[in-house]
Length: 111
Image (cartoon, rainbow, N blue to C red; front, side, top):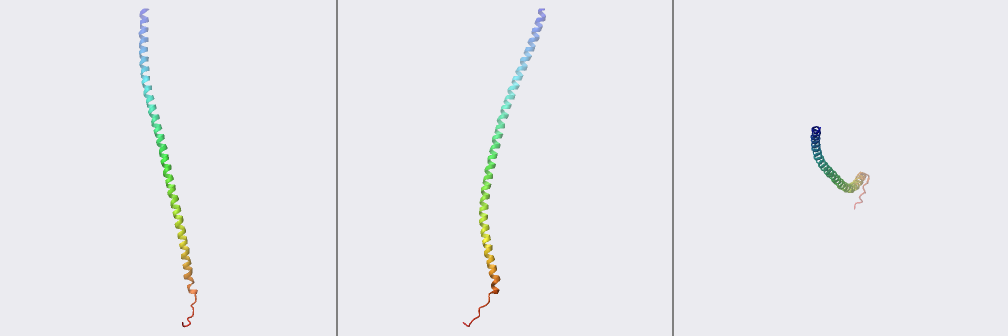
């Protein structure tokens, strides 16, 4: 009977050692996974802030492009007005040149 109890104690001791080893392995694995999780969270935050920075740069570039476009529009409107005015002046000259043949000569009184 005593021998049977000793065998059971030895068996339980082996099981306890095995359980402790498993618990130690699981704790190590858990610590490793926690470290990986922390690294992934840090990387995720870095990517998010990088994305935000990229969006801010894109917005800034779009604003600069808009300002340049507005400057070009204003400049081209002025040039178009000058071009139309010049075309109107040329049309007036062309109309005057067409009507030259209609102008009758003034007779020369000998003077």
